[in-house]
Image (spheres, rainbow, N blue to C red):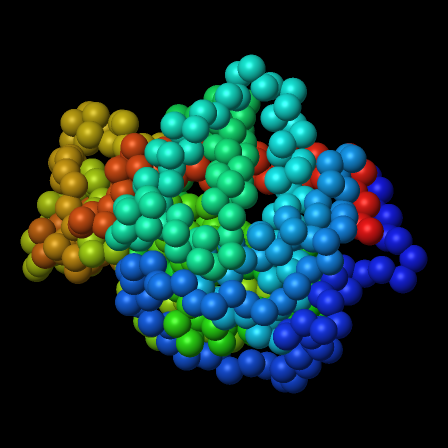
Length: 455
């Protein structure tokens, strides 16, 4: 385990000078009782807003000396102030007396991780050379996403107190780290065909269940000083998002969930009812599309949920069916129905999707047929319940219709409609999730074995 040593009388929250405009205050008391599910609604337009004109620098000062050391790599007060300014600028969270400690903690955590990354990358210096052209290309992409030019983007940062060289050094670390993680874990992160099949089956089986399109921010208690600090910080972020801070930008900078590194930061995608822990499910059921939740305490941290959309199920659930039947008119006697039932029950135990048609051909008085793929909603009403709930490969009990008595086997099920993910999309999503997990484990192990000293 890593060594965490604190100098006498020094704590992280003592880094702000006594004469600064923002002083340290006691944490905001946690809300008592169960929170109301919805805190308000963020402004969706904030996600698409161009980079704002730089506001006046937040009036706080940091001590100039060494703040921390990570395996003898130092972090100074200047470094910490610069990272705080970058975090404030990119998340558009307005610094206040209440949230400044949380911003400081997030910035310090990021700097510690940067030093861990830099130390690890130094072992692969020849293979991980990041050129100035690589950094220029990254800045150009960021500027384009913000609707401005690279120079205007850097000018905006400079006006906010962020030194371009500090910003470029941070990008150099992130680019190199991304290459290291991809090179080291890329093959391990690739899902197997069996894993892809399993995920496709899971998505298909969930097609008819209620689903929620969710944005998430997760504040991990261990990283911010405990559960109470996580709750206080989450409450501050909720207020900032309602007041105009873009949800995605806040998620990218503050969330500990893997989705923080997604293409759309904070996007957890469509989640199926019952697939999350009860505390979150209760909020999912209560929130309406467009609403932002109050902080949701869970074991180990606090969630903030943005309910982007809801639906009862996919646009269509498609099933592949095969059947075996005994023809019976609607006027058939009870004795005829009983005889047909005995025949079908005698065949049922050994039937599979592979042999149901051959068994029909080999049995006198029994017909078989491949019904192909159909939308469950388009099937005969008598077949719909089993088509929705039967497991793949299962065979129904005898089903009576005006045409006769049937045994039906579900031989395939998938999501239909434009939202149905392709196998390639499923594979890409699983690879990204696996890579995020491996990266977090890698960084956790580096931190646990590091010597981290706070001055």
